Every structure is written in C-alpha cells, then in structure tokens.
Image 1 (cartoon, helix red, strand yellow):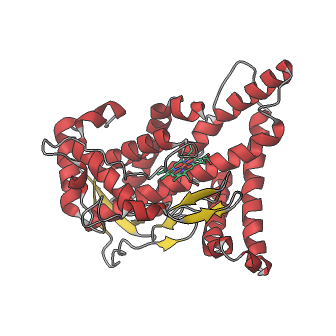
Image 2 (cartoon, rainbow, N blue to C red):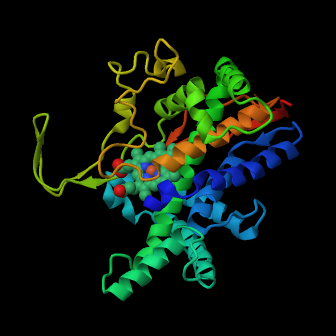
Length: 354
Ligand code: HEM
C-alpha cells in the first residue's frame, strides 16, 4: 500500500487531466454527460497506478471494462439488502450480479496476463510490477507473504475501491457547485488570484487555496459516498453503550451519522464550505470529518484520492465555466444508496474561461 501513497501520483494524474481537458474542450460548449469523463478519468488514474499506463477513452477494452464495472456496481447497490437478509441470495438477480463481477474480473485478468507478458525484472511500471518483484523476492527468500494467488484479487480490490469512489466524489462536487454558483465563483477567484491562468494548479498550491480545500472537504462531508462501512468482524466480545457484542459478530458502522452529527456540524444538511475555515480564513480541522474512516482498516488510498479530487476539480474550474444544460432540469443533490451513495447522471455545458 506504500506504493499507492508514494508513487508519482501527481505526474499520473496530470497526464490524465490533459486528456480530460481536451475531451471537455472538444465538446465546444455543447451539453455533454458529465459522469462519463469522470468515470474514464478516475479509472485511468487508478489504472495507471496499477499498470503504469492509461487507456484511450475510445479503446474497446477500456469501454467494455467501464460498462461491465458500472453494471456490477449498479447490481451490487440494488442488492445491498442481502447484507441484512442473506436468505434473499436465491433470487435470480444474484446470478446476474455474480456474472457482472465475473465479467469485470475476466477483463482485468486479460489485462494482467498481457501486462505480465512484458514484465522485466528491475523495471517498475506500476503496482503490479512492484507486487511481482515481491513475489519473486519472497520465493527466493522462502517466504510467501506475496503470492500469485493474491495478485488478481489485490488488483480487483484496488481498481474497484480506487475508481468509483473518486468518480462519485467528483460528480457530487460538480453537482453541488452547479447548485451553488457563488461557491464556484469564490473557488475560481481564489484560483485566479493564487495560481493565475498561465499554468495549471499543482499540489504545492493547496496550501494557498484554503477556500477551495474547504469546499472539497464539505463535498466529502455532505454527500459522503461511503455512508455505511464494509462489514467487519468483532475480534473479541465487547460492551458498547450497554450492548454486548459477541466475538465474531459482523458489524457495519454508520459513518454517515458522524458526518451529520448536529453537535459537530451546525445545520449539517446545509452545503457550507466556511464551516472548515477559521476566523483568519485558514483551513480548520474537525475530528468528526472521517470520509476515509479511521483506525487500522481506514482507507489506504486517502492520499491518492485527495490529490486526485483536488487536481481534477481545480483544473476543470480554472479552465472552464460550467453551467447546467439548457432544457434539462439539474437533478437535486439526492443520490441512491447502494454499496456507495450514487450521484445521478447529469449534463453540463463548459465554456473556456480564457
Ligand atoms: C474519495 C475517495 C475515497 C473514499 C471516500 C474512500 C473511503 C474509504 C472508506 C470509508 C474505507 C473503509 C471502509 C470500511 O470501513 O469498511 C475505505 C477502504 C479502502 N479503500 Fe478507500 N476511499 C476512497 C478512495 C480510495 C482509493 C483511490 C483507493 C485505492 C487506491 C482506495 C482503496 C481502499 C481499500 C483497498 C480499502 C480497504 C482497506 C481495508 O479493508 O483494510 N480507496 N475507503
């Protein structure tokens, strides 16, 4: 996981932002579906971290991967009730869901096989190569901490956990900004003042962009995309607020309730970036802000995700003025709860700012 946090993320993301801005420019101010380029961007960023290279938006394998992945995510969301009612497993749509995840796994496996065929000792194109180095190192040293059997599952987990999470955050971010043009303008003013127009925002600019940082934190708080944690098992019997939870019980944490706690967040349903700013306009931390969860099983992709959200949104806002599409009502900021809190699809028009 160290690889994810310390790889040359900014360079990977930057290359992908080039492709994204080009795609938006090619729409020439006409309405386009905003969700598609966000899915492509975030899938390509995690793909580059894993494989060391990106895929073109119109690459047939990439298109198939995105389609199968979206279907699997959609079906998983619809079936999340099975976590509480496992006897529903007999219903036919469970097979459909398995088939969709099987299809996703097959495509990534094909890509893995192709990638492995060009593996060279001493060269690290991405996470997969780093993993293979470890397999070889461990085999030579007689250990088996990293095995062949772990490679594909690790790849699937990281691709799944590292793409839709960031995509949804970016989509929610744009939807909030379209609903709150004054917040959008304040971000663009801050970008113009601190970064200018002759270069793109970089991670080094973050410290000079407190309002932008606060707005992104507020997006992650208000429409928290992982409201309920994944299932975790209690390792020993514990007493919690008067309840005894026996060892081995599966528990799911309601993380959403923490982000909506009225004692920690006055008017929690209001979109208000200024709640993250102190009286001097500096970013103010709040321990209840836990979009990446806490503890040993918190998100290992936090660093990458925060970098990606910042670089993609600021690059788009610096370069374009966004508005909702004529003739299409902008959806309300209300999503669908499945395995993630899903943002509705919507169209935008983007006009170059300079
Ligand atoms: C906005 C983006 C993201 C959000 C909000 C997010 C949120 C979370 C949360 C809340 C958890 C803990 C879930 C639980 O308690 O069961 C988690 C786990 C995880 N995340 Fe993320 N994540 C994001 C992006 C990423 C990225 C980019 C990656 C990969 C590069 C990633 C990889 C993982 C993995 C592998 C786990 C499981 C860790 C474990 O079980 O020990 N996530 N994430």
